[in-house]
Length: 193
Ligand code: URA
Image 1 (cartoon, rainbow, N blue to C red):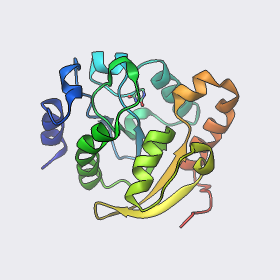
Image 2: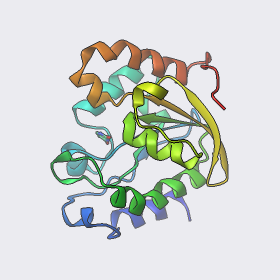
Image 3: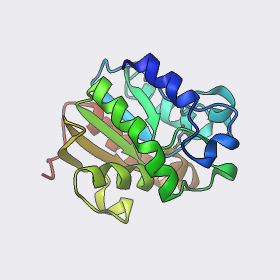
């Protein structure tokens, strides 16, 4: 299966009740030019409206922060753990995350990222669980990268705050920017194997 087939499958998905509320599923967009995939939590209202990831206010902060670092969002593959908007932007349930996880795994198999940047606790928790790690506070793992194998692909999972959290807590902005600069730059943090 290629990415286009997978995107079509995601757009028609009825695996969990979130399909009942969506305007558009949001498979993801971008490229693996830099070898990096960014994974958020789930689409919000703007993303549901447009069928594109990270295009609302949190997305604009992400796009602007990347641009400040000289990175075009077209050079990164941007997606979410859950591909359909949870009503009222509530946190996706465990069942919804599990129902949607095969899509993220297939994206990883097709795109073979060298590094995944997980934004926020839901994304970080879901991804680190795939390499056998439990996490219950983003503050405990942010700024760190963990090496592992996901769906047969060797990669690093690097964690930082979700841009929506940065908008709510402006004092996190500097750390968020520094984390992205580190994850996208040459100077990698020590690997936590
Ligand atoms: N928040 C997310 O986690 N993902 C999006 O696509 C938009 C906002």
